[in-house]
Length: 317
Image (tube, rainbow, N blue to C red):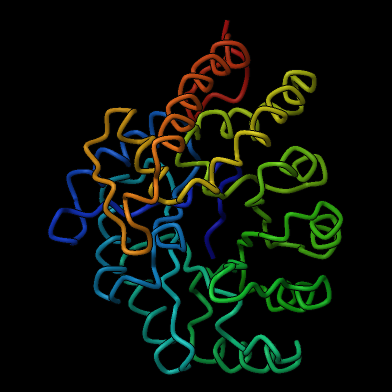
């Protein structure tokens, strides 16, 4: 089983060409951009990647290429677990394992209908696990689409007892729920998807951040995950900025993230399979540009004297 690194794990978006295929030139530039900003790993295939609108072959292509591009510099995890039929689920996961990712992340809403009780969900997962080799590192993602299924502390405790899981992307946006999960998570590391509760969750024992804002200013999340203990007052101020700025997600995401990356110099189009580029109206574009400006000011103010280097854990001279 893989040991997943603590820190910032951006949920990657998928760049598309004008012909609506995966843009590998933009993808390579994106990976370089993430790495230069000190991320601990990349969540390569997820909802931000529009995984429900990618073919299985595209999901595999995306994961395999990201693994190649990082070349061992950081870890890579991927989901692409979108089917409800269990035979198809097993096939998806085993093919994803073959891409070389460090862990395959299971979508919690794929094992039962929204109206089904936890007992049904657990039985479905037990059957699934019986068909997956125990050497495969697995995680969970409480994906909001098509419905959000949060793991209860009781269910998470049972999952931890199987010793099959290493990762949980929590999307509860509720510090009390997160604390209850951390109390029973055992060997499952929890990564908070919610910016507003991030610092509180780190103080409670969360391993890091894995959310959409990693596509805007991952260096700030990487810094907070590494230095919140040694610089608590600076961490509090940075948390305030991160919590408020995360509202940009409501501005036609993932189009707004692609616009931001374009402002950063990445040759990426605004093409998506879930939103029209025109959904990013002029006011939203201006807000994204202003967030980029504020990020630069925030980085200068709060990260001064600290390295972006992913291997540096303390303040530099």
